[in-house]
Length: 349
Ligand code: TXA
Ligand code: MG
Image 1: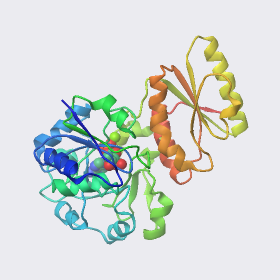
Image 2 (image 1 turned 90 degrees about the vertical axis):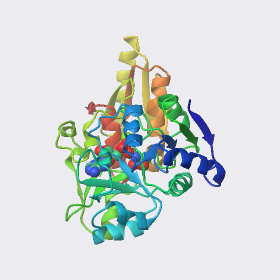
Image 3 (image 1 turned 90 degrees about the horizontal axis):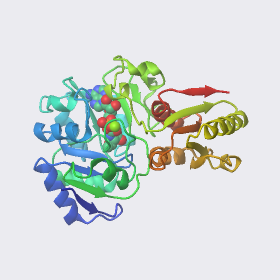
Image 4 (image 1 turned 135 degrees about the horizontal axis):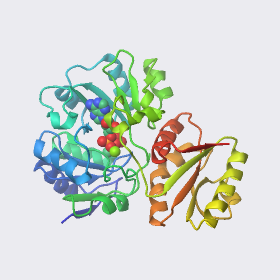
């Protein structure tokens, strides 16, 4: 039986936080909101508890987990060495949606790191997440709280859909603010490497520490091979049941092309979905149109993306045509998730 606990993220009831923290301490699984997406947490130091995460999600064991901490001092316990660039980044972006990879210390069980000697750490800013980790008194390993391969959950209904009955507690803390998972930055190299783009962008990081690289797996289909540095990037991801095509190019041509393709597929008897924006949606009069956000405010697209992908499935859509978006700043994270969801199927106009 899964217990669902509702909390106000601005003013969470500490008694209920303590109840969930106790479940974590004692080796149970708790799904909780963070500022990015919902996470599925377990006590990182308890191997049996961490194993349960992989089982509940159906996650491959060679995909390592992020350890979530609540206090800066905790970092020293779980990593061997903290490069000075990481200190600068922590001061600027923690708590917040930046995950950094370090050499792990001996007390981090290998089940978290897929047998490697590096460990990913992050300090979430969401108040519920922060208090939960603090009260648990242990680091919390937490992947996104979805079934492996499905879009990450940004609302409690997504978590309930995927994990009800498979975990001990689900905390309902409302919608997640950011909507895409944290930026993952490998700090073990002289020039740090972005393994997964997020809302802390390359530009924002470079402003404080100078040059960083972006792993090739972020933008290329070659992420399907074993070269991907973040193992999670090599798996089929974010895949709704519908087939997705991204239509890219000059926006006017994109709209025309989507109208044309929609017409054809409707005539084939398919249920067609269109992922549009506030600026473009009035131009589509056929198909099931969902507005993902505002082109002038790309953060809105990041926030809604996974929810919209799930909504097409709820509607039983067969084929989705999505407009392409700019890859600038947070757009890189959006297009990275969308391209994976589409299996890199693109139509250029
Ligand atoms: O925003 C987030 O990061 C959310 C919330 C819950 O904190 N968590 C999340 O976890 O997205 P997950 O497991 O879905 O994605 C973690 C990513 C995966 O791509 C994984 O391969 C990579 O981080 N990763 C974790 N540890 C790593 C390591 N030691 N070396 C390289 N990549 C690592
Ligand atoms: Mg995930």
